[in-house]
Image (cartoon, rainbow, N blue to C red; front, side, top):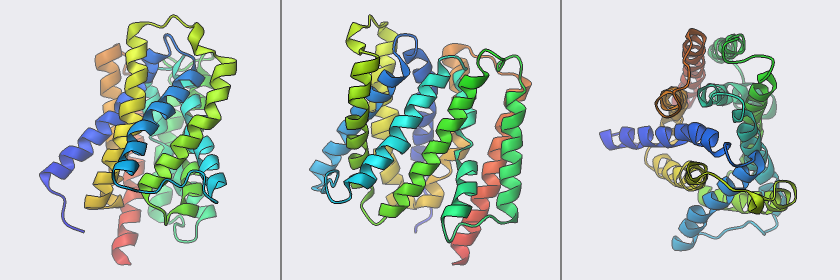
Length: 297
């Protein structure tokens, strides 16, 4: 694998910025749309560019092949449920808190991977990283200015949503030999199929009178953080590999806090900053351990 160039770091930063921008856009979308509708349009609009990429590159989409149950399960667990839980939580929680809480995903993945994979066991560095990161999350929940009895449950749902990302990732390992584009297109298709009737029955979005800014943000969420970002991720993976691409975990919570302040004037307390630093340090220890393991193979 070649050494990253300046353009690679620029693309990595753009990817981080796009994914981080999802949080404040979700917040604005919740002004007019329910969490199920937000999840539905994210998945539907996200599927379009990925499916077109597969068609353009003549990559076979196996959504309805013999492995359809895997794709459907991953679509439910890795897209439908976390997208809903994040949007549900952001209704009552600042978007910058959601960015930090979602950044705990690599830490949760470290714990679950120890039990459900053969070659990703917890070691000393990972243990330190997980402890520091989750202590930061616990400290964040003690911030009575931003998290109180009225929105504690909503914040917890966001953290819960990050765990579903991890479980979905573990399921994806079962079909890891398939092309990334095919897997992503297939799970997006199944995610759309699963959540469509739920959206129509429960929230009936055609009865809404949405604000323009909420609609723009909803469209943005589907096309960019869900669709375009995945395509950019594929490009970075092919050029520089998984370890380089995984560095987005450091940047997303930082950009998320900054964007929340710029666009929504969200409060940044000392506890928010401490939690942010703790999570980033925790991710650093986990990633360093993974990198050392890969280079020693």
